[in-house]
Image (cartoon, rainbow, N blue to C red; front, side, top):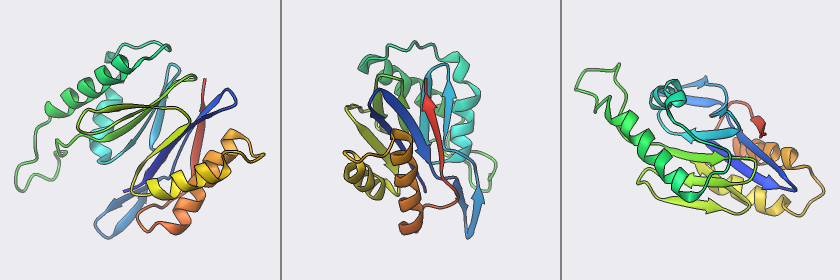
Amino acid sequence: MSVALAIRRNGSTWLASDSAAFSGSHTLDHGPKFILHGGLGIAHTGCIRAWQAIAARLSEFDHDLEWRTKDAIAWGEWSRGVLRKFGAPKEGDHNRMPSTPIDNLLATPRRIFNVSPNGSVVLLPRFGAIGAGRAYAVGVLEALWKSGYSTREIARRAVEVTIRHCADVGGRPWSARIQ
């Protein structure tokens, strides 16, 4: 459980997330819940091991910076295919990842997409958030949209507020600009 967000404002696109990974009663510092890959930022929530499988094979997914909705749909299909290769965990097998898809935010310098586990794709005009802390993050993003804060500062503040107020989000905030 976590939060990841993307915001595009004043010609600047940023990803931000918390860093917590929850395992039973333990909270671990997983690091950022996004990666940057050739001008594409990909944020995730869900199974860490599923995300690692996708990240390890990211170079197989061909893309350019002029993403359209069809490219985000192709991403959703590709990432679900990677996860299907691993299959559902067998009883007693704790080393296999679940085959359930994960939420993704895809961000380029010009566009933000939400790709949901069921494969639906939404082009987001200003910002979006995924994960357990989504409602908190979207509230902060909306409240600070017209403020004098920079895009980076709005992204970081949204994650910080979510970490403080949502029990299912934790760790420290991370942010990165998509270029």
